[in-house]
Length: 186
Image 1: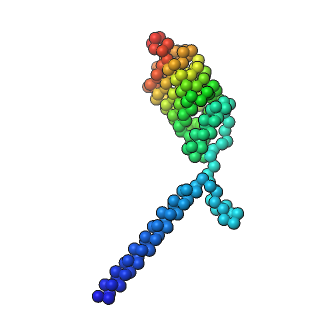
Image 2: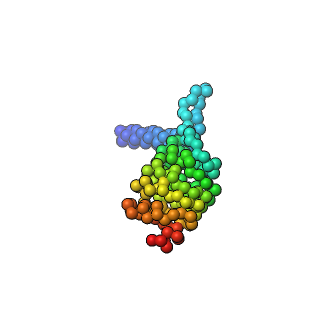
Image 3: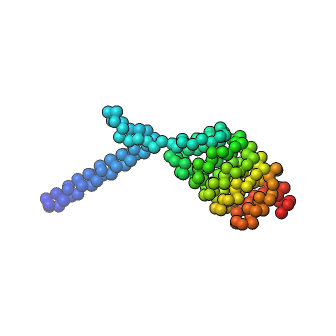
C-alpha cells in the first residue's frame, strides 16, 4: 500500500512540475510577443532589439508616400520585398515614381486617383492583380511587360488608348476590364 501511495505522490509531483513548465512557456511567449515592437534593455544593455519598419525608400508623390508608410507600419514590414499587397485608393495620387523598389508586389490597387501613366510599373514582375480604374490614364504601356499579370482593371479611364490593351490581350491570358471606349473598338 505504501509503495502505491509513493508512486501516486511521485506522479502527482511530476504532473505539477510539467504544469508549471507549460505555464512558464505560455506566459513567456505571451510576454515576448506583446513586447516584440519594443527594445528590451537590462542595465542599459540591449538584450532584444525590435525589428524596425522599412523606411529606406522615397517616392515622388507625397500621397503615395503616406499610403506606403502606413501600409508598411500596419504590416510591420521590415524590407521592401516583404510588401506584396498595397491598396492606395482615393488617395489623390498622381505619380508612381519610386514604386519600383517594391519589386515583390503581387496585388496593387490604385483605384480612383489621378494617375496618367503606368510606366513605373514595368519592373514589378511579380504583379498579378492591378486595379487602376477611375484614373486619368493615357498610357498603359508599362504593364505590357508584366508576364504574371492575371487581372487588370482599367475601367473609367476615358483618355486611354485602346491599342495597348489589344496588344496586352494578344500575348497573355490576362483578364482586362477595359474602358468603355475600348469595348466599342473591339
